[in-house]
Length: 225
Image (cartoon, rainbow, N blue to C red; front, side, top):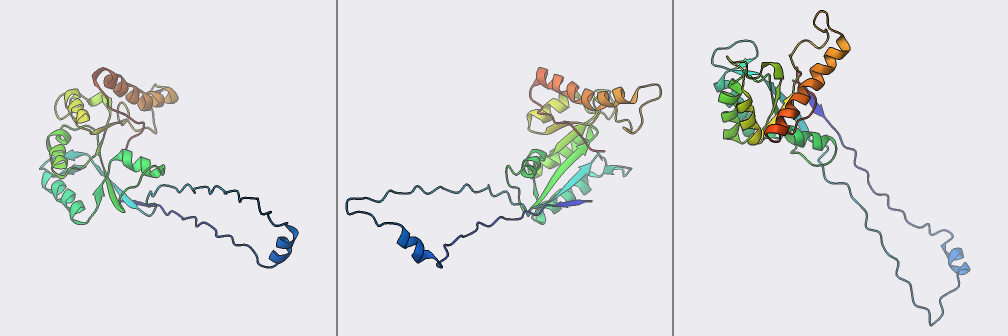
């Protein structure tokens, strides 16, 4: 698990003082004010300070896929998942949304000194039935990255209605390509550039069209592996 450490170098204002050497010569060359003259007030500029965005904060990004009782590749058991979520709380690690993390990276807002972002890939329905209730128990935000080709196909796939419910409850629904195919190689017989463009932007466009019809997903480009 990689951590990203960002260090902010504070810029200290320089205090500039006048040099006493030569001060008397400068004073002698300026005529003194007459008795009727009144001093003109000098407006002092108020310095604009950057917002306190806590540049020394550290964060970790957690990635999950499926949630089932039977261990398998990319599977987290419900008990293990709940224990991991509790461990974040017990160790003073604040869970922040992906949007808050991006805003922090842009120096627009602060995040806690120890933060975590929770992401989930591939729209298994166990994310709706198992993971989401546990995350709601702890009040943790999270981002769900889906590939659109598998939604509503039955079996263990999540449905559009479930995604809509999660979206309306504040879950970030994000793009994760159309087919989840290895992006290094196009399927046989397809032009790689055109296929890659559709995988990345086609997924995003599909979600945006559904969002326009159903509500407000607030999608961003990208995804996890």
